[in-house]
Length: 604
Image (tube, rainbow, N blue to C red; front, side, top):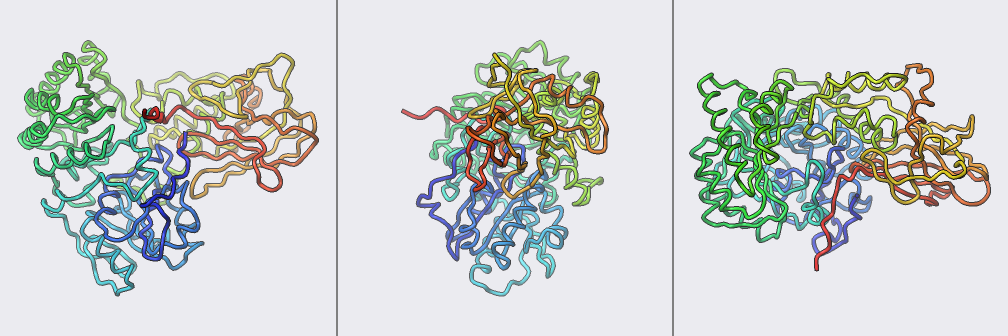
């Protein structure tokens, strides 16, 4: 369920010539998640500002803005960033475009030379970003600024001081109306929960963790003070937030104790949807007691097993930390509010963790988090920007296949929503028949970059009639269908021979769109959507194999024969399906969704 475009309130009244317009690009995990660093950087900048998602920002707002800021925090956003920059340039060739984020910091030269942005923030943004924005608004000449790259060169690298990091504000978002509306919506994976970075960076270099790749900011780790964390928790409580995440990483044990003790002294705080801590330091019994004192709702500890830390701990340290985590798990088992999530990157470590955690009950969960082990812009095997783009751009095909093809959905179901996995998908048994061609592609992509995509996936639209007594349904697999879209059981639709129309793919700034023009006859009751075989592969009986799982279709328009455009827009884990007339006006519309977002019930 995608939120409606935000109302223009006091802080979102539109852009003006001095407005700093921040646009969050689509990324196709959860497009609504905004990185905490983007919020703290924008909050550090004075003057008028407006936050928008790519799917809601208007041409008028872009045309009126004084400066446009974008983020490339997670590498998965690259596929949305590039068309968004193209849209901005088409509307405003001269407007300054600033990009920041962990992934942007790994590719400043490439983004400047090949994507068309003007400035890239590499590292801590909160000090230099306000100076950059002030100069751009005023039209002043720019000298070298710390952590700012431009076509004229790079400014000096500079870390924030401890006091400056303590003063950063990752929570205020009144200038971003839609984020303020949705950031407490529960989600099946990758929730929008507001985040407090207690640590920036990490001493470890674990390949599957974004914290390690934050080394682009600098080698040292910044930590909030105990008093600073307590102030942030008070601020989150004042804002009425329902959920919260704390990023701590491998914070030293004594510092962890001091942080949690300071929070407990100001507590208790209630965040109804719970608090999550990303923490790889085993908390002491006193630390766990402090957590239960501080927070009145669920507290989830998420950790990577010490055996997977990079560089690896010494045998003595490993034994000590594993024993400490076993004690934590036992304490969690007896708790009413604590929960422990163990994220293992390898099947072997997942099995080892399950062996000791399994008897402890549902409050201790073990999952395979290898989905995070994808092509990342850090480390010795750093990909080039084109390689990274090739890895992440087909990500939309994972969702398109699950939403639109009941035949392909079961092949992707073991990958869940690209969050923690219950088992290693590579161990699944080969399927028989024509669908095996796509299964082989999916597993090859999974083994290459831990993204189970279907590069080259295409669909056709086929006019169809419904058989007598057939009853379309509103669900298949995990997908739910609404409006004029339904799932038809095998044999329920009779497809019109020779009438299939390929759907062309358009990776727009705000969504991936599939479009095709059909000539419908008077008897065409439905338009079915059918996946095609892998490109360049001839698969005997593929269409029959697809139809044997049932088909997704949209009901046709009433009346005589007419030309219609089928348009499918993919965004935020749902597909919006519409039949448009020759004026582009929707005649039929519906949607298919994965139950990803669950808006809270309305208040009293």
